[in-house]
Amino acid sequence: MKVLKTSEIKRRLKSVPGWTHTKKGLVKKYEFEDFQQALDFIIRIAPFANELDHHPDIYNSYNRVKLTLFSHEAGGITELDFKLAEKVDSLVSPGST
Image 1 (cartoon, one colour):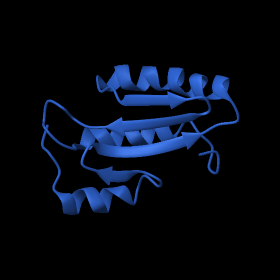
Image 2: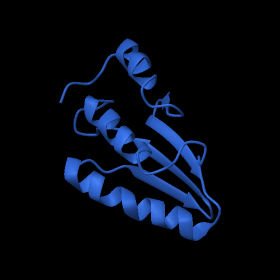
Image 3: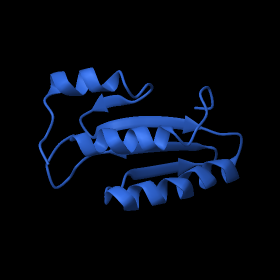
Image 4: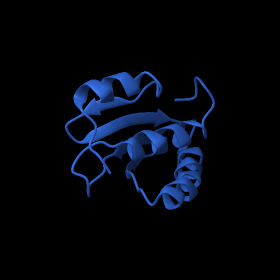
């Protein structure tokens, strides 16, 4: 899969609100009411990640979850990262992050 240029990443970020572009990849932080909701969210990500064969780096601390998406095989951010970001965002209602 082709690594996206910085200009394309910036353009595509408009379609996934709340995600940022860092040296480590696409990053987004989510906050939930409690640990159980955060854990449930993480578990609901698994089918999407398996379907795309693309697995995020996940950090969880109590009610907070941070996801980092990066296409390691390609060596950068690809369209696959944006596909997963969109699918993950479909799991949460607006204003819940």
